[in-house]
Image (cartoon, rainbow, N blue to C red; front, side, top):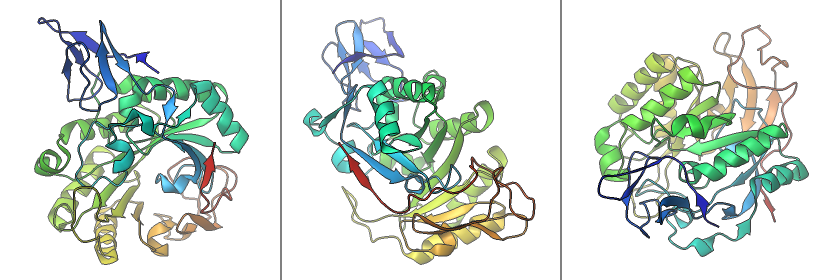
Amino acid sequence: MNHVGRHASRMADGRLRCEVCPRYCTLSDGQRGMCFVRQRLGDDIVLTTYGRSSGFAVDPIEKKPLNHFYPGTSVLSFGTAGCNLACKFCQNWDISKSREIDTLQSTASPDRIAEMCVESGAKSVAFTYNDPVIFLEYAVDTAKACRARGIHTVAVTAGYITDVARPDFFSDIDAANVDLKAFTDDFYRKVTASELKPVLDTLVYLGHETDVWFEVTTLLIPGLNDDDDQLARQVDWMLENLGPEVPLHFSAYHPDYKMDRPATPKATLVRARDLARRAGLAYVYTGNVHDKEGDTTYCPSCDRPVVERDWYAIEAYALDAAGRCPCGHPIAGRFGEAAGAWGRRRLRVR
């Protein structure tokens, strides 16, 4: 269904400018933005996917990935269609690159999604699969409906959003994982058709102006963003601007969509993790490979394994209700009295 969008302005020549993301698409009547799902109809820019989803599933929260947000719990995940980036390596291209709104098989209002979360027993709702920035109004309304019922919401996003839309989008979000796709402008321009700075601005905003718990993911692509110099600059920037306690996930790329480079070797992820930890980041993980050490949370004070994982399953949990290690050191994040027991399951929800 169409839903009147927010964050737009009228230009002198009569076109409407969408101000949700830094592309600032300027639209005449009937035109769609680069994301495809935001369209000008008359005097409004509307969201054409409001209330429509590509499907729902209950996942482990670690799959988002979020390792410090109620470990072991389940999350009701959904997305829509379209994207405001053009990543040549997109791992969800069948959804994010879709130009067919008929891809969206499920219909659910924000209130219904909150009800579905309660019915499924999940602790939170995740906006994922494609970037929720482009379905801002649907995500914001769903986050408000969930918060009214005591349900957490999670945004899995590339963080490509404008200064004006950013506070609106994150106003009722509890946690986020932000894809920092590389640490060069050249990579962002050539591989994603976007820019690095707005993503860094989003990370600084989350770290300094909100209470949103957030973690960062970088998908390492051989020969493009996995060199030590680029990784070191990214880690140094995070330490200076976000501090040592924001978790960083290095994930393995596999060939998909328009990119056919070889898959990322596990050794590359281990090297990146070691580099980041030596530089001073407290919590660094590996993803998309089997690496129990890289899955596990260690206390930065005594180096004790406090949340031991195998893939997405919690095997041992040593934190108290306040998230403290037995040595007394507080682990950054959001924790309950015990870990959840959802494990590795993925459950489709109708």
